[in-house]
Image (cartoon, rainbow over the protein chains, first blue to last red):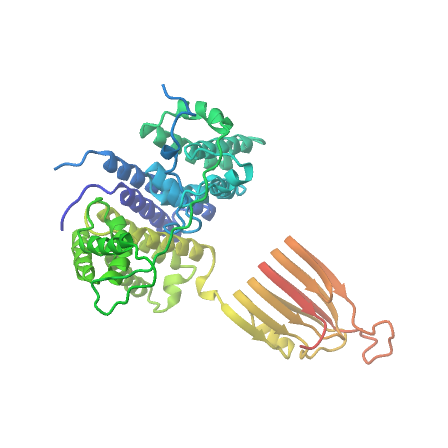
Amino acid sequence: MKRRRTDWGSLVAGLLFIGLGAAFVVRGTGDWGFDLVWVLPVLAIGLGLAGIARALVKSRDRDAPRGG
Amino acid sequence: MRTVDEEPEAEEGTLRRDRDAGVLTGVCTGLGRYTGTDPVVWRVAFALTGLVGGAGVLLYVGAWLTMRDADGGPAMFEQLLNRSIPPRAVPALLAAALAALTALSLVGGFGWGTLVLAAPLILGLLAAHNRGVNLQRLFRDLPSQLKAHRPPPAPPAPEPKPAYYNPAQPWAQPPAGPIDLAVVAGRSGGAERAGGPAEEDGEEEEDEDGGEEQGGDGGQAGGCGVPHQRAGRRVRRRDRGVRLLAFAFWAAVAAAGVAMIATGRYSADTLFGPETGPVYLGSVAVIIGAALLVGAWVGDPRGLVAAGVLAVALTAASAATDLTELRFGRAEWHPRTAADLAEEEYRLTIGSAYLDLTGLKLDPGERVDVDADVRFGALDVFVPPQARVVVNGSAAFGEIRVDGWMRSGTRLKVANTFEPEGAAGGGEKGEDAGPPTLVVNLTSYAGDLEVHREAP
């Protein structure tokens, strides 16, 4: 599979979903708990950061001089 | 140095709403195009600030009022004030309004609302600064830009629509009147563009969209560009690599099998029930997150973010409520005896329900409790007129009507007693024991609750 430049948006979103999913798994097994009202703001902030990361990288790529 | 008034109008014509490419009104698409950012960033920012007392909605409406339309026609505010608002002042005005709202949220103390408003403001300013925008000059020039009394741009004249005539088609008849050859050339050019490589801009997704639009023209004109376009799409698809959403889907299916074997229960309860549902759905969110991590370097991660949001929402919902108990649609309940009331549950998640208690056998002096719950929707309850009815209703938002009496609004709570019809006359059967009492407990999050003292 061809490797390409790092997609920071996917990277941040991936870490966000792994973190949230793992938190629910641990909560479900009863070892640790948290208030569900935190899920929405954490999700919104994480997605916002992922979008900003993607947009910044995109704009940087667009501004960079093209080779060739 | 050039002053604000000396700058030509042409430089200001780039910030425009793009309704065709946008989701609602094209505001975010226009802002994204103007600032060189993804429109999704603007949508998230408006949605996020909208959680704080609707601030994002106000900002969105403000942006819509001050942005010119796709054809460069005057913005709504420009028409109302009969003066020009420079397009480059719009993002500065939005930032100033957001700063004012952030300051306003500090009244009463620092809270999460201030944080939610301040975060996009600070991040936006940092991003603009990083991209070389002179913020100091931008805000310093803002008052003079707004004070400059320039007339608003004239609305664009409607484009003439000459009839299309393709002289290459031998069966085509030329239309009456003059033929605009520029139209013919334009159509032909569109067809050529559709057939050509669409990789010039380097943006895969945007190019694909553009290619589709051009393909529409090309198909009309000649159709020879379509095979080239399809081949181009196949090449782009191959370049993107394996679709990771499919991997995540099949991994989630496999995880469902593992969860069922591990718990020994082979039903939807294992996957969506309150006990093991959050664990399984949380695992699905982890799978999607892992696929996204892989997609950061290889493969095609499209669709995974939406799937992840859905998985997290389902996980949170399964932790908060029993998803297997959700009921949708229309329900009709006709209990006949007190035993029916004890056995059945009158619950509906979303929809409309109809509870007929007029056929209920009630003895004089007997007291019967009925609980009915419609989370989102409408509930009509019919009670026998000869019974004393105690109505306890509560709704977070909506309307409660009882026998002509009505209350609507938020956080509704009603406790009323309605005496049976003809109670003052007396002399009826069972007078010693008194009329039967029906206690109706109705609850809803958002909906209309209505009690009728009559047969349906």
